Amino acid sequence: MSVIVKICGITNLEDAVNSIEAGADMIGFVFYQKSKRYIEPEKAALIVREISSFVTCVGVFVNEDVEEIKKVIDRTMIDVVQLSGDESPEVCEKLREIVPVMKSFKVSENFSSDILKNFAVDFVHLDSFLNGEYGGTGKTFNWDMVAGLSDQWKIILSGGLDADNVREAILKVKPYGVDVSSGVEEYPGKKSFEKVKSFIENAKSVKL
Image (tube, rainbow, N blue to C red; front, side):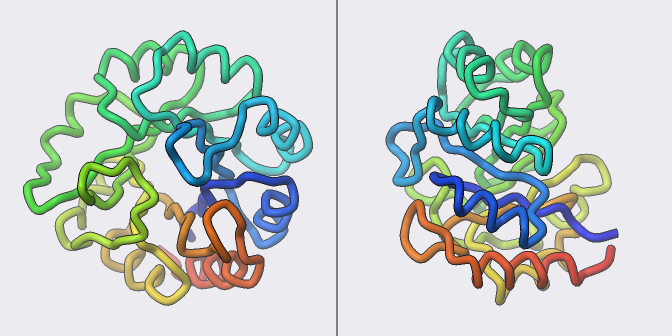
């Protein structure tokens, strides 16, 4: 079995279609306005309408009000909500009544997997911790710290992944999936088709 691949930070239809053609399983739209890869829900809705039958569409939120998230779900018809802020287990539970939930956790030197036990979610997203930033750091973390967690959770590994290191990351962590944004870009918000293609080929070449 090979990992699933999520291409995140999609801002235009061309990048979404190219990612799907290259073999992406999930496409991520960032609804966090401070992000360089922010996309307006109305624009995302148009893209989702074109691609939703081919791929799982994920909406990324950071400390957003539950009712606002519900409005975006209704407007865009996204399939999965990714919570990349400091959301509580209760917020996850409320949203999980509507859609599957992916909760993001920042892995620093002090990271303990004990925190994961408090959250009933569908996917556990592990990202790098850097100066309190919410995702998109482009930096890797020590994968040894999370090796073995995939026995208990559907781990989506993120943080500084690219075509050159994704195979090593998968072999160490054995995640359910991998997530990439800056590692396959020409510049923030614009993907490189060649980088996306290489990343997905390398990721899916590893059999777990």
